[in-house]
Amino acid sequence: MASLGEALTVTHVEKKKKPPARYWEDPPQQQEGGDENKVRKDGEQTERQTPKAKKRKENEDQGDGNQFISGKSDRFPGPAPIPEDRLQKFKRKEKIKKPRRQHYKLQDMIARSEENSEMSQKQAARLDLLLPEDAGFLEGDEDEDTCTISQEDIAESVDITSKTKYFDLKLSQFGPYRVDYSKTGRQVLLGGRRGHVACIDWHSKELTCEINVMESVNDVKWLHSEAMYAVAQKKWLHIYDSKGIELHCIRKFNDVLRMQFLPYHFLLATASATSFLQYLDVSVGKEVAAICTKTGRLDVMCQNPHNAVIHLGHANGTVTLWTPNQKEALVKMLCHHGGVRSIAVDKTGTYMVTSGMDKKLKVYDIRTFKPLKSYFLPAGASCLSLSQRGLLSAATGDIVQVYRDVWSAPVTKPYMAHRVQKTVWGTHFCPFEDVLGVGHGDGFTSMLVPGAGEPNIDGLDANPYRSAKQRQEWEVKALLEKVQPELISLDPTELGMVDRAAFDVKHQDRVQALGYDPLATEKFVPKYKKKGRSKSGNDDIRKTAEDRVKIEKERKKKETKEAVLSSQKSALDRFRK
Image (cartoon, rainbow, N blue to C red; front, side):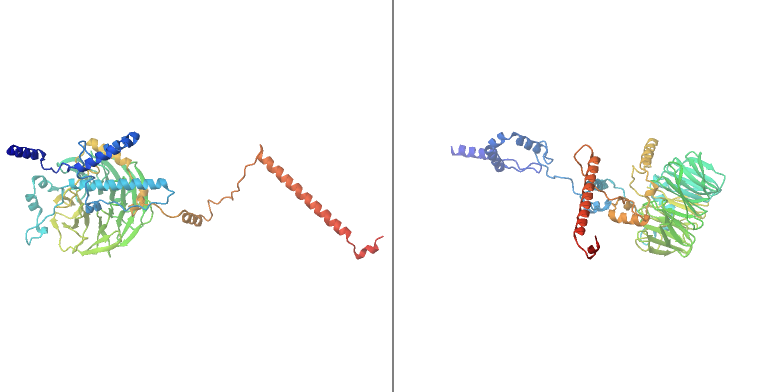
């Protein structure tokens, strides 16, 4: 019996044993459950008396986001945390100070705008993990300068796809050539000085169109898409389509030397030999502004991609900044002791690089308009171009040099160098590719520059692989979101700010400007309601009665005065009979 009892005791203990708890299971809460049951038993009468409260409690329990269908709680409640440095990377602006309590609508608008900005910031920070592509730079062996590595050595070391991006086009008959890449980086536009114009899909090496305009060409520029491009010819400005058919001949734009296209405003800015800066709205085909700069021949031109401000270089060594809504220059900077040869601005709108006849290369901070670095080049630089990753290309005669980090640290030697056949006439970095296009007197050269292009493509803005239907839809959307020329300013963040000037201050300024108060009116006298059918009649009756009482008082006063005078005796009364 003892052994059987021991066996039963062991069996009873084994039955009570439970398997170890797993990490996905909740810890047992027997005592709390018992207490809950006791509370429920004690409060049954109360729950029966208030069924609405019980139903509301059940709905709250069902709507709890931390509870699953099985009843288990989420061990990691709430959204996943985001590192603070990644949030700061995508931060757009500081929070706006909300106005007074009376402006309820404005407060709601500001609150919604801040919520949308914060949501987009968090989404961009989370999706940053999905951008694994990173820009890689050229690195040499020990005691080897990267500028001594030739393009042939680079082409032999890279893969087959990248190797095809290095090529030369020998076009010595109609050179030298201007170069321009489309916004997607898929098409390249070549314009020869002697009238040769060609469009090439350089990825597949297919010739889209080729024409000869039979007169000299000063500059070429793609418009909003690959379907249209502008050619600055000897006399006037011409617009062609992708098949080489002339669409427009704009005779108001004569003697054009350089061009820049503002993609978000659909504006084509032109600088002419007659010292005129003109803006053409290509969406409606009208001239927006024509500004006479009064600074002579304009053959140096560049745009700031951040705020769409045009930078012009002049023969007296100054650089001026222009917008279509002002007839005078926003800023005038003395950059060189000689004439300015070329200008380039980075995509963030922070740094400007200039080269002049004094053989100097200078880097300026546009926020403070002060020089940061100054370099001396033995032969100067004629053509400057900045890539999406901050690489600078400078052409000196027939040599193209590429510099790295020119504004952050002193540069003593170039990052890369390449010699072409004849004098360089134009350089341009290809978007989203590690390629530099060089137009020279003997044709066109496509160079491999590791680390030049942005590796992550924004498919909603510029998609190199889009179809014709996608391009049409993008064009319609871009036209609907077109920014007006009046909104171009030196500081684009001012558009989102609230004007906090008091109404009285604005009113005083307006009075001083006009010389009179436009809001001044007669003093308002309230009219109180009267009982009766005719309000005007009651007023007339009241006035007539008051007049009568006043006249009667004056008559009585006069009679009283005469009676007093008559009762008094004087010394002349003795002569009366």
